Amino acid sequence: MNHSLYNAAIKALARRCDKDRTELGQSADVSLINPYCGDRVRLRLDVKDGVIYKLRHEVNGCLLCKAACTLMRKLVENSPEENLPLLIQELRGLLQGEESSEVGLQEIEVFSPVISMKSRHQCVLLPFEALHQCYQECRTQADETG
Amino acid sequence: MKFDVSKIRKQFPALSAEVCGWNLHYLDNAATSQMPINVIDAVMRHEITARGNVQRGAHHLAERATQAYEGARASVARFLNAASASEVVFTSGTTAAINLLAHSLGSTLGPGDEIVITAAEHHSNYVPWLMLQKRVGVRIRILPVTAEGELDLNQLSSLVSDRCKLIALTQCSNVTGAETDVAPVVKVAREVGAQVLLDGAQMVPHGPVDVQALGVDYYVFSAHKCFAPNGVGVLWIRSCDSRSLSPFMGGGGMVSAVSDDQVVYAQGNSMFEAGTPAIAQAVGLGKALDWMMDLRWSEIRQHEQQLLQLMLDGLSDIRGLSILGPAEVEKKLPVVSFAVKDAHPHDICHLLNERGVALRGGHHCAQPLLDALGVSSVSRASLALYNNEEDVLALIDGVARAVRILR
Image 1 (cartoon, rainbow over the protein chains, first blue to last red):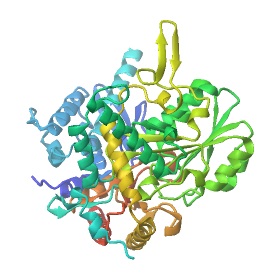
Image 2: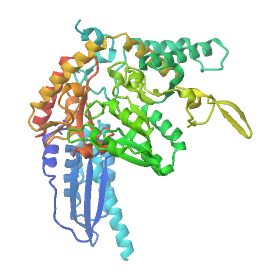
Image 3: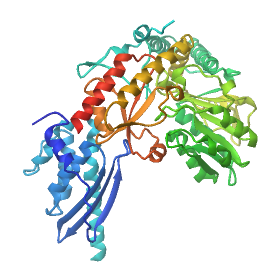
Image 4: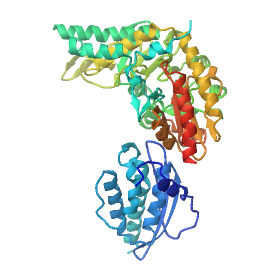
């Protein structure tokens, strides 16, 4: 594990965080701002038959925020929607210095160098919090349409 | 005589620290400045020898606390060239001072009245007025900035009508460092009978202020930016005793009599200081301002401008870096915000910290200004009198390194 915050793995993830303009179908749409620095994340999410079908993101943020967004997309697209809360819980746990309890989520450990830097936790969490809100919006939409 | 920065630096213990194995280069002075040892000593000595509550206490420590607290008020008055110490109100900082005024003055305003603020304000001189707009229906008009981030004073006359009751503006931008030409603002205000509030939070760390020459009605600043403790600030009110302002917070110390059905408020500045104030912090502020008044500020100004020029030249050489605000050192204080293509401010600040350089990145609580300048966040380096050439060179090297890593 590379303990440098700006290691090759994080930088590579950040570089892949290009804006995706592909249109979605009926999607949840959430924008979040980090009040401390003004970073902005906009997410749109399509869930189909209990599977996260597509995720689109626009990030105006730091390298960590971009890297988190790229990894998040990789982890959640085409995965069952019930995995989402677990993923967010795992990331929060990682940043608190807790051992990962789930096999298969080791990829989020790329953010281990952030653990000791409390002021940067929100940079990583912002996309995941947006995702959580998107997910809840999807659930509400699903409940309303029966 | 040339300003001896090494002599000044020795008075600031925090500056000898190491960060990540590198000498500390503290360039976040626009947020909080460091304290000289005499101020730290004064606060500690106060807590040991004069810790009591102020006013009304008959015992020795209360008497000493009152003397020290009122002594600090007198120091503030001298620093500002105020007519009297009774014009000085201690608050918890600039934000509290502006909120106090927004409530106190705001209670006399209503629909049809107007307040002019500027797009260059810190949120502390923006949000309280927007809240007042919501509360009592005053109209807030906003003076825009030019493409260079300076106040567009050419538009002032057309914005200030005879319904304007107050113009509230900064003396120096906390983002661009641009200094405000206050005289034309006061002139326009006087023509319509409006008052002027000047936010001096960024100006005060760069030398004594003359509120008589400025001609404004209210002046605010914070202690933590001018070599003094956190938790105390100042609202100066011209002719405080004769103004028809109402109190903001109720409690002990701001009344002369209270009964079941009546409250008689104290007069003058006491009316605004409800509850036990931050006594030791105010004492520290008084000591810091006394210390500042003993310095030769024309030499310090020259020193700061030389460093500012070095910083502007060095940063400008970095490819893809753009500096916000005026480029001429004569137009600004040593506060420099910059954006770098493909390198986010948070990442730059983080990488500079690895080299001991303390910067700030983000929107700097000035989102309307950043929006006007087309950026969402920037990195900011801000100098104080104790900074030296090594600090500036470390910044320039550090930014160049950060850009190499991030691109």
